[in-house]
Image (cartoon, rainbow, N blue to C red; front, side):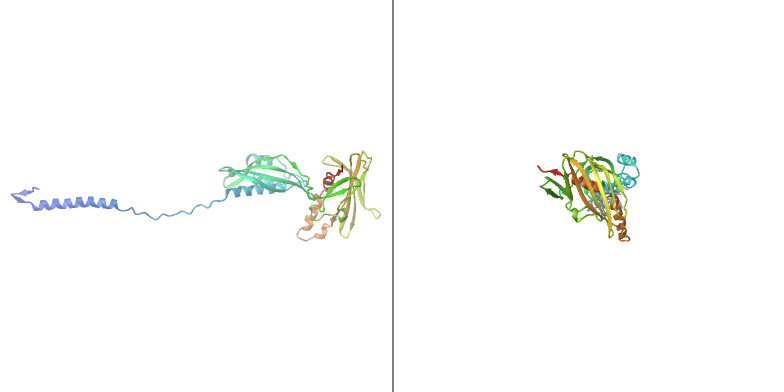
Length: 318
């Protein structure tokens, strides 16, 4: 469309050009204004953080469960806490392992440390006990606890050297200047039902000179109206030989058993005598499983160990 028509201004053409300029200019200004606007941010939706579990606590619970299972002496109780090499070792054991005396009676965790993101190392001290005597020794077991899925299992075990403990530090000392010896003894037993007779605290001791060989005439006598039950037998405890005499009498629901243990030291015969009181476990029938506990204690208690521990502290005075 020409700007001039027959010498006159074409206003219609000018109007069209103006409108187009406004549209183009307005678009450019509008784009600049829009881009300059502050970006409107949508509210941030926070996802709750995942609850984290104390990994070391999980590993420690596995260790405690494992040692408590060992104390039950049942293979099936121990296996759920193991994996890998540790599990293979226990699978070779019989269904029930260990003995009632001595037995694993208590433990403590000495240390723990994290090896990497999936493993911990624990050192556990495991104490052997004799019923009626207490702790007699311990060993330290090193456990590697590995994360398997969502739980921790013991993958490796290593048992340290056994340490023998003669736990007589709290015992009293009986000293006889006339015959020149001393011996340690307990004032009471670490038992619930069996106890020492009061006249056996301290125990009776006899030292006979010029005897170089232990003579032990073995016999066994059943109870009669005239004589109580009695027996004599040569025994060996931890390599030491003793002649053991025992005689039993019952009265008022309690059995009194007197024990005498003789051995040779420095060409002298040393004889230790004490009396134990055994209650009639049937008297506890129906009282919080006490009857079962009493019978179990009588089954596992070993007076030979008690005598051996006392005689192991015997010494002649210089």
